[in-house]
Length: 318
Image (tube, rainbow, N blue to C red; front, side, top):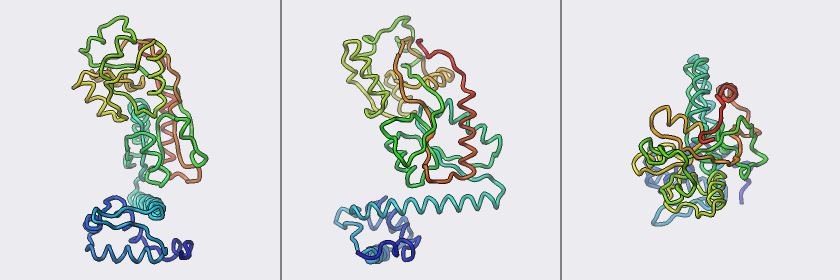
């Protein structure tokens, strides 16, 4: 094995990092070459050069394409982190030159988008209309890895305790209860006293199986001596939830803020059912050792203001 410290500090070039990330993304020499505007022999030659630097096999080549080895996966993570810092620095320098305030990349769960993030971005834009906010929707399993490698500046969503880690800084902002929604013309929307038994046999859109909201929802059915629904679509996507709510007449388990947004837009009705479930608070996650950019700091301040300004009141059905 070669001197890894020397390779990382001196020998490895930006083009090498871009190459390993492209190979990991496309898993094929030809497609990576096309993406990088290079010939396939040039990509093969560069990969051999990188592997010779490390003295390690970083990718396994086969007729099916390329697959990173355990060493390769580690180098890919390093490359993604460096390239994310490069992009962030380039954007900040360009922002200073143009008089804009920069860029912030946010990973957001649906629970935080309509009632928190949208308001916070409005506050941020009132200060600096030229600040670019990039929002990527998803869940913790997808967004936390991107936060760790620097592709996201912060995460906004439920602070699931199972994902706490020493490298993450968390800040709780508020509690957000859950409720059940359906299409406005659904029979449940007109029912004055629906029961859990009424819901058990219907099609559902539910959070992913790992989410605390899904686990506790299943427990509510067990508490009422019922099996959880079996006709289920699992998704953390707002659009997927809305699509099946509308097209399949499914019912959905969503945060109160999301339910209020859907009701205001005439897209859903809240089922008049108490949902006595306690869940982790909504809040922020950032990397503990990474200094936030000025744009990120501004958005965090706006998120705090938006959280304080949220309207309270009982949960639907309560």
